[in-house]
Length: 380
Image 1 (cartoon, one colour):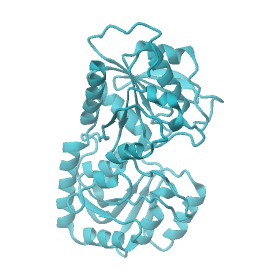
Image 2 (image 1 turned 90 degrees about the horizontal axis):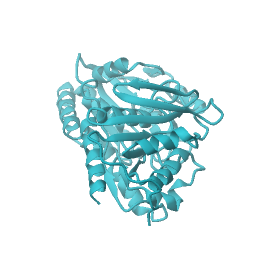
Image 3 (image 1 turned 30 degrees about the vertical axis):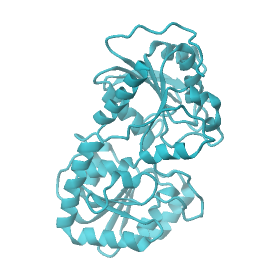
């Protein structure tokens, strides 16, 4: 049962007003991560055909416009750390929801999504929720009955959809749509000359990414670039210990243009995520969508991933790269050796990888899937 609207529904405008709400944003003052990039790129893609506002939280409040997206940042509780719960209980938060035709929340286990679902439902606004795999461990949103008030969940992989279907204790609306994720294919594009010895990993330096196993798999004559920000000092020290005596380059702070250059130059990109890390800790759903794998593929780079979570949905095994078992590290070593020693195979797979991204994983396609979901809800 939905809440009865407390306000009359808005007359449909000629341009849809979409409000995206996210707990963090893609910037060094917040978090440089896949979830933050996902929200930002989706907002940009939608701004081509809608009036888009991104409401987020940070150490200082601001309002600005970037790439046709109006960006509104409210101040965190405590005002400093993004690890604190954001404080959405301000008039400006509810005013933004009231002004929108569609509300689209990102992340489940955050206060902003819980309050937005309640407020949007009460105001008669359709509210959609996308699970990006982040949030706060102590926020039991998945068991809150109010989450059933969401119009639909727009999930980023079939794997994510199956997770929700298999967990009846997780409260959810009746509609679960898959919108996938995208890549800016103009920015992430092929170019330059491949280095047959170069292997690249891109992502946060956290244990469930399995970077330690990738370091172990790198063989003689291969050079591994580990590109990403460290979020776990103990794990970083562990990686440096494993890399001793090997040709491993750690790069903690690269620009977007430098990131594209790494993808373009590498013969193979690897996303070796694991469900159980080197300490025995289990990550329940480590990769809801392999954005780094899709970015590498867009740059025409053969990509190797582990058979974990959503990753086999992104990489077509034997066509755009390889899918290997996380429990058999020898498979990863073998595939790295095969691709580095066979540049024709690597180039063929890289070209196929680019085509797959253009066919399936563009932000325009993801935005269109969102608009289609909004339209279906409007007809109901």
